[in-house]
Length: 183
Image (cartoon, rainbow, N blue to C red):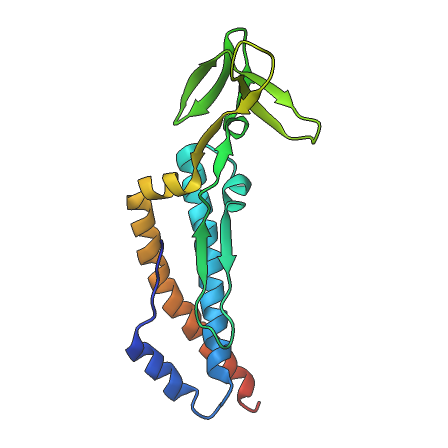
């Protein structure tokens, strides 16, 4: 899990700056946290999509953003453990089966086929036995697996957004003070 914390000494400094504005601190903290979490979700989406070769939108859909509120100063980007369908990996039907891209290589799944279900869901399937039915969908890795395998990228994002959190909170303090001062 990606965890970014705001230093207590810096928080006390922000409290001193906003002491004359009673309801400003919760507003500043929740806005700063939410802006940072939204930016972190974007950075994680871009980094992981490049790593596994998926569209950024497909990766971002597997990331859930929990927003901070005035009373709960905690925001989070949660990585889903649900697996991607192989169809998302550029699956193509061939005479021998289905090929898909994985880390810049094409991999063949023999006897697999691409089908669209009555519900409109499109996927890569295999038969469970010699009969036509039942079939099962073939899945790729989950985003959680990719996330745990990308420790170097996650550490880089964590250090980058720790500094960004401090900047975002500082920007929000300046914005509040600027709006409150008479012109």
